[in-house]
Length: 287
Image (cartoon, rainbow, N blue to C red):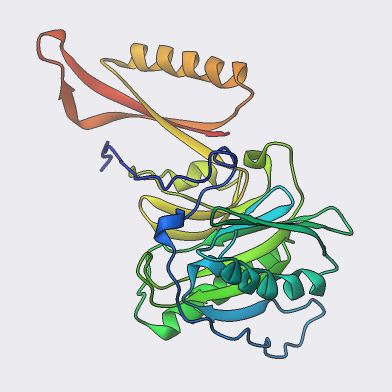
């Protein structure tokens, strides 16, 4: 059954300088937690290096990745030094060199350069559907994400277990290497599509790499950033015209149409004296 829902989300604001590129926990949301020692990865019988692993409860150690930098909100400069102390050896393991650090107003930045031009990107799984109290489930989730990255040619560099804290539920975060694009929406990244509406998974099967069909309305995938729009109309002719107009809008704004599906609503939307909306079309596109 197709359902049209309205999703609302609260956004955490970043520093004004970096707000266009960086999303994360605000400075006031960071408090000091116990720092777990970085664990040496278990030996594995494969040619590639295993990612560094750690259990952390201090969210200041969890970076936001943008361009060729890692950033964090940290209450004190000492907290930021713990951040750089954790991430500098991880970068060095993959031949990356720290080119600078800056800390000001509880916001820290670590810049780096890569020998092959690749950059670090990250994915935090807290919005996925899983049992956060099951250690075996968490371990499997972490392993599945790392394997998916490996299989797609995106080198995992760190797999972090986020334990109990005051701001997000226990989860895992993975960091990996990918090729940069001027527009980060165009990069091949590990992402989640979750906007409150049921997803037409079959329409996306040939455009992205499906990692997990998380629920009817949640998909974890590897690829460019997928956008979604539902259009409504009174009749089939009207919905066809709206779809044509929207495809032109996408083209005019350098977005790539993927696929669409038109369907009749199970529960029409009553517009009062203006009639009813009986048809809808789901439109998928690359941002």
